[in-house]
Amino acid sequence: MKPHIYIAGISMTHLGKFCDLSVKDLVREAVTGAIADAGCGLADIEAAWFSNTRQGIMEGQNVIRGQCALRAMGLQGIPITNVENACASSSSALREAYANLKAGLCDVALVVGADKMFFPNKREQMFQAFLGGMDVHETEATQKWIREIVTGFGTEEASQLGNSVHSFFMDVYAAVAQLHMRLYGTTRRQIAAAAAKNHCHSTHNPLSQYQQAMSVDEVLGDIPISWPLTRSMCAPISDGAAAAVLYSERGRHRFGGSRAVRVEALVLVSGVDRKPEDFDKHIGRRGALQAYEQAGVGPDEIDVAEVHDACSFAEILQIENMGFCNRGEGGPTTERGETGLGGRIPVNPSGGLVSKGHPVAATGLIQLYELVTQLRGEAGSRQVDEAHLALAENGGGFWGGEEAATTVTILVGPDR
Image 1 (cartoon, rainbow, N blue to C red):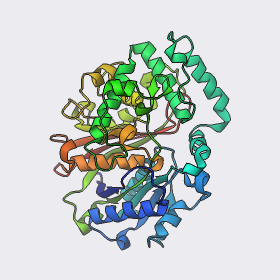
Image 2: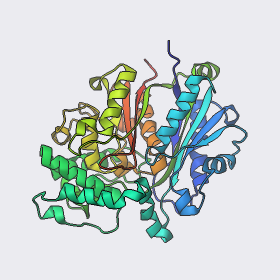
Image 3: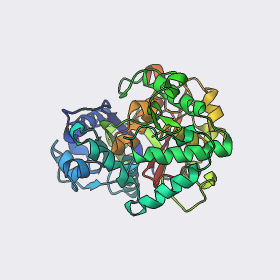
Image 4: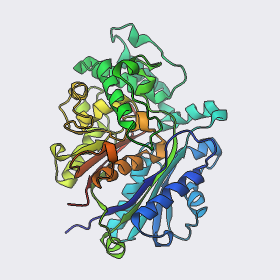
C-alpha cells in the first residue's frame, strides 16, 4: 500500500492591499492558523518550504526569504527550503513537502506561500515585476507572437489597446482568448459570465479581497484592459499569505487527524513546444491527465474545483483542460450555469483569483484552503453539497502561449 500524505491543518489571511503589514506579519498569521488547525505546535514542525515572488524586486530581499520570515516567528534549526515557480510557487512547494514526506525524510512538514505585491509608492516596479514571469530574453518574440495571433481577428474592438497600466500577462491571455474565440466561437459574454459567477461567489467568502456581486453586463461595461478583457475579468494586485501543515501516516498517528484531507494526486508539469491552436497538448491538459491517472479517478468524479483564473477566459480554457466539458464547450458550459454553486461542477466557489484575490506566491495554497474547507463541510453559504473529491489547477508564469509551470492536485475528504 502506498503511504498516504495528509493536509492536517491549513489557514490563509484575508486578501487585499495592506500598506501597514509586512511579509513577516502575513506569514505569522497564516502559520499560526495552520498549526492551530492541525493540532500541533511550532516545535513539532520538522521541515518547511517557503514561497515568495516579490520581495526581491520590491524590497531587495533577494534570497533566504523563508529563513527570514519563519525565524522571525521562532521557527529555526530545521531545514527551510525556498521555492519559486511564479504563480505556482506554493503548490510547487507543497509538492516538495509531499515528496519528502513520502520518502520518510520527515513526518510533519510546513508549507508557506506569501506575497506583498502592493506598494503604492513603487507603482512602476509593481507592474515591472510581472515581466519576470516570462523569459526576459524572449520579450520581443512574445510580443511578435501576440501580434500574429490577433492579426485579422476581424473586429474593430479587438484592436483597442485598453488600459495602458496592466500586467503584460493580460495581453498574453487576451491573445489566447482571441484565438479560442476564433476557433470555437467563444464570446465575450461567456467570459463575462465566468467573471460574474466568481464575483457572486466571493460575496460568500469573508476572506475575499472583493465581496461585491456583479452582473454580466456590469462586467462587460467595466474598464477595458486588453480586448476582450475588462478589469473585472482580471485578477487584482493582492497582499496575502497561506500555510499548510502536512502529515505522513506516522505524523497522523501522533497527532490524530479526523479532519485531515488526503492528497490523492499532486503533479507538476512544464510546457512543451506546440502549435498555438493545439490545445489538447496544453500544459493544463497534460497536467490534468497525469493527475487523474495518479489518483485513479476521472473528471466526472470531481465534486468541486478551483482553477487558475488569473483572467476569466483562463477559467473557460481550464475547465476544458480538466475535462469538465468538451474542447470548445467551456464558454457555453459556463453560460448555462453548470460551474456555479448548485451547478453540475462548481468551479471557484471561493470567488476565484479575479475576485478573491491573487497574491502570486500564496495562490496555490489559497486554492487548497478553499478545497479543504469544502471537503470538511465547513464552507458555510458557499458549501458544495456532498463534496468528497476536489481538484485544484494552478498555473505559473508564461512561456509562449501557455503557463510555464502547472500543478494539478486532487484531494479526498476526511470521510473516505
